[in-house]
Amino acid sequence: MPDAPQLVLFIAAGLLLNLTPGPDVLYIVSNALRGGTRAGVVAGLGITAGCFVHVFAAAVGVGALLATSAMAFTVLKWVGAAYLVWVGVRLLFAKAGTGTPGFALRNPAYEAADLWAVFRGGFLTNVLNPKVAIFFLAFVPQFIAPETEHKALAFVLLGTLFNINSVAVNSAWAVGAGWMARHDRVQRGMHWLDRTAGAMFIAFGLRLALADNPTR
Image 1 (tube, helix red, strand yellow):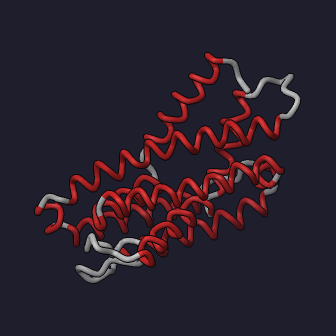
Image 2 (tube, rainbow, N blue to C red; image 1 turned 135 degrees about the horizontal axis):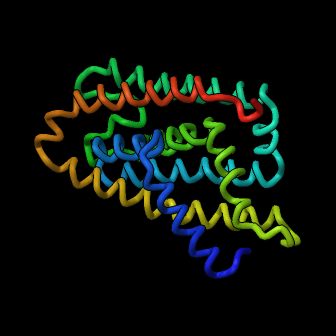
C-alpha cells in the first residue's frame, strides 16, 4: 500500500475522476430523475459492481489481456458500444410516460424487480466497457511502489478503495437528480429528458465504438 500522502492523493484523484460526467453518471441521473434517489443509488451500486469485476479481472491478468490484445479489446468494445446504443435507441423512441427497462420508474412505489433491472443495467453499462479495465490498469499501478511484494493484492485493495469512494460520489449524483425530480417542470419535461438521455447514450456508444485499441 502507498504511504499516507500517496494514499490521500489516490483518494482525491479517484473522487475527481468519479465526478467526471460519462455514461455511468448519465445512467445514475436518468434513473434518479425517473424513480427518485433510491433508483439512482441502486444504479450507482450496479455500476460499482461492474467496477469490481474490472478490478479483480485486472488483478488476475484479464485487464492486461485487453490492453495487449487488439482482438479481445475490439470484441468487448463492440459489445459495449452496441449495448449503449441499444439503451439510447430505446430511450430515444420510447413513448411518453413509458421509458425503457431500468428507466421507467416514475412511480416511487416501484417494485424490487424494477430495482433489479436498474442494478443490472448499471452493471452491464460498466462491465461491458473495456476502457474501464484499461483505466484501472493505467491509474492504480501508479500508486503501487515497485518494491511492493504482493502487487496483485495491493492492486485489489486500492481498486476496492476507489470503488468504495465512488459510492459516495454516485450517491451524491443520485440525491441531486432525485431532488430535481420533485419539481413539476422536470416531470413535465421527462419526455424530452428521455430524448436527450437517449441521444447521449448513442453518442457514448459511438464514441466507444470509435475508440482506438490500446495496442496501436
